[in-house]
Length: 228
Image 1: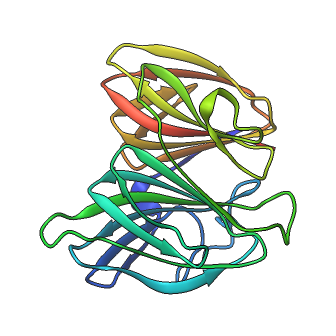
Image 2 (image 1 turned 120 degrees about the vertical axis):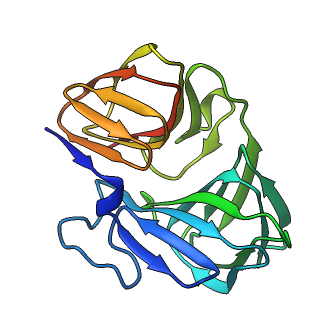
């Protein structure tokens, strides 16, 4: 079974400095139908105004992946990491037994756009850790995160593989899941996925449907999640 999660149906929060879209229940947005998908618990698209950001706050027992789409995010955490993550780079914070961090837009003029993704780990109470990596875009699928850090990907504490998808107009790709659940978050473009059409900001989820046929009707970019 496959289902379309339309962009405009997502939860919405606007605090001035933050304009956010929530694919799953988060913060003040609650929908019992959309509490997550398999171990994918949070998928937020955040637009952060210049000089805006999240003050220092705690996390525990969650794998938190940040994909920067435009601008730069400044990161500081209780492990001593101080870093800037520009567009095209990925950050993975394993909160484990507990970590505190802040994230903000250091620019005085340029907005920041990112995807924030939370994955439930397969073990709790582990030592927290931080990873950051530039992973060059290429046509087709590029592995971003995996349980063993294969092919130079980030190492995530769950039986999950996350891929970046890049297709030109007219390109197609046959994707076979190893797990029982899949999710697509389309960042830009338009894709035909089996019998569904996804446009920018849309998501598509699958349960027990392991064969995906992806056809780009225009240049398209997204993230694909292979979930247990």
